[in-house]
Length: 477
Image (cartoon, rainbow, N blue to C red; front, side):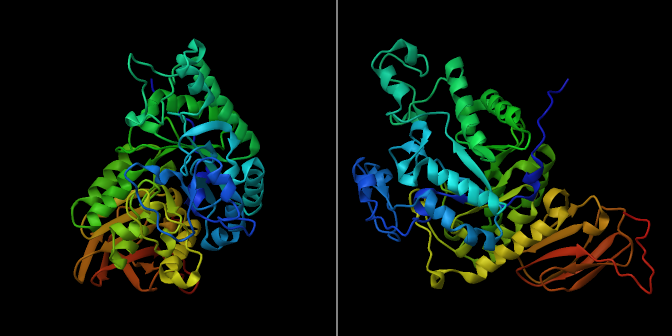
């Protein structure tokens, strides 16, 4: 007998997520980094001017370099996000911590004063919800920072706290051996209760979901436990886990960060992977919670998309697939305007607010795709039916036939292709209209013939032509 699964929150199907690394997005209240100098230097940090590229250092002290971004600044940019079409914000960690990335938590019950504290979070939640934007926080529960009060007591030999970590004869277990990140003993009752308290506190404050850091390290049992805690609070609260694997097998949560999708697409577009369509179809069929998974192309943990794929057409193809493959598209802040960046910390550069430096064409492309996804039901919850591996052609089959969408990607030379469309409801003579060019292609006997320009893509939508009051779809749905 299979174990029942929690349903994916209803609003997730309509979501477009925008990932923000708060320290690098915007400084609020009209301040500069100089105005906030004491906030950082009093805690051993260094400050840097906005726009100066972050660079890695041998001793790793670049994690103590601060640019001044805060939650006040994010709240002040809500209009920017609304204009783009975003309806969900994912924030990397915001709790009290030593580093700029905040994955070394000192106190989960305190929003870091460098980000504006609890008042700034409350204001952000209120403003976001007023504008129909949801908030997802980053839950870092696999490990804590060395200054966490539990760990400070544990290293002093307090047995009450020692069992909340893993100590060996000469050392303690830390995430990938990094001594600044001691791992919690997640099976201990006190630790699980503590995590539950954290989850509930911020759910009660009004956040809409959690993203779990190091979901693979948490393992299936803890992922399931956390999702149960979240769902006890509300079935409409969302839980996504950071899993860097093939996506199937992790359906004890609402979804995972689907880096498999991104790596499949990027390797396909850079000529290293030949069977992208087959791989994407296989993952779709084997992942029950695929519609709750995040379609990732870049993030705070990877090189930026514009750095990985220089060719503008190929980059647009990647973005097109991100918005047309089943799952929730995630836009990493600044990717929509063409910001480049190598591996951490270069991918964590400050947001560019000088509009003259934006790639406006790219941003407009994002806006168009976001709008398309919001208006086309097939792209939100339709099935995925592969019709050609190369050129890549797939059908997003909708509950109503007139909502069907076909996506075509041709990264090679000009050609004319024909393919069978696996939807028996589609009647002969029905036109498909390209949403980009308005060109029409007609299906005849279940087969669609399409002319493709070299290096091009199409998104084809069914069009029902009613002739003198005659509707051939009058009894077909």
